[in-house]
Image (cartoon, rainbow, N blue to C red; front, side, top):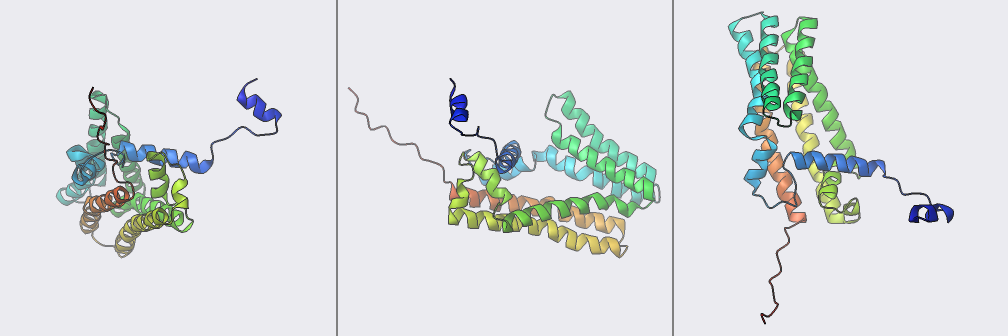
Amino acid sequence: MSEQERGEVEGEQPQETRPSESLSAALGQAARRAGLDPAEDATTGKVVWKAMGGVRGIVESVLPLLVFLVSLTVWRDQLVLAVVLSVAAAAVFTIARLAQRQAPSAALGGLIAVGVAGALVLFTGRAEDNFIPGFLTNVAYGSAFLISAFAGWSLIGLAVGFLMDEGLAWRQDRRKRRVFFWLAIMWATLFIARLAVQFPMWLSGTDVQVLGTVKLVMGIPLFAPLVAVTWLAVRALYPPKKAEPDTRESL
């Protein structure tokens, strides 16, 4: 009789993966793919650079919007052309990753986002509506980080718990719980700040080029330092283990 069958006979239920553990695993795997694994021995600069995707990642995130803004500046009121060019710019990166047999997830996600924004612009006929998907994204991420922090289930803590193979044990450590709370608050603040600055500008009819410039400035320039702060805080909680010297005497 197997252990599982024996447990069922004795009245014990088979252990199931809890939703929190599944979420922790998903967040941890996403962080690992982004190069944010505290178990790895890497410099802060290297971690931040990898999290941004290097030169290609930065270009992939910036170029489609830049092309959209420049197109509207050069060819005023040519919304269709601006949308086509921005979607084409995002599509090139996705095709390049597929051709090189690289993971297309980042570029594909960007292509979908640019496509949705472009479709919305063509539907409404308003260039400024290109920013609506970004507003919704900021609301979703900001709310998720904020709620997780005050609920005691920091998304940062869940990801780190999986990466460090301690599961949910961090919730029993007051110091870790406090650090993960404030890290989640900081990330929530980033997304909420973007929304608080850009949404009123959108409502007031601010020029599209100005709003686009503000979005770019509040993108990677704010994201990178926060990644560095998060990395340093987590490494302080989980310092790399030093290899123990070999004390065995040679024969």
